[in-house]
Image (cartoon, rainbow, N blue to C red):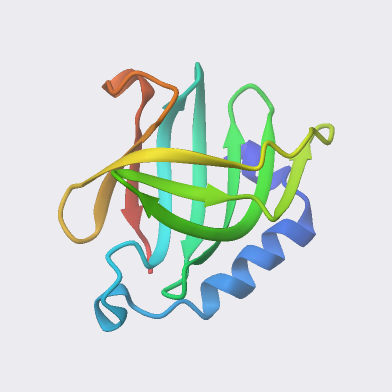
Length: 137
C-alpha cells in the first residue's frame, strides 16, 4: 500500500475519473468491463494492478511493484485469441520514465462473474506468476 501512496497525483486522478464513469459489466454485455484490483506476482515482483476497463474497449490502469517500479497507462484493450491485449497510448513510469513498449498481454481465466486470473503472456502460467483480480465496481 505504501507504493500506491507514492504514485503521482495526476495518474491517480485520471484513474478515478475514468472509474467514476464505468458502467456495470452485466449492463453492457462485456465480461471485462468494470473496475478491477489485481494482486500477485509478474516477472519476479509482487504487484498491485488497478485497472478500469470501459465497455467501449478503452482502459486506464496503475501498476505498482514491490521493487519500486510504478506505471500508469491508458488506451484501447481487445481480445486476441485467449489473450487480453492492452495498447499503451499513454505511458508513464516511475521512478524514471522508460520507453513505451507499445502494449502488453495477459492470458485470462474467469473465476466467476467478479473474479479472474491474469497470467502475463511472457510468464509461466502458474500461481507464482499470476494476478488474482477482483471486480470492485
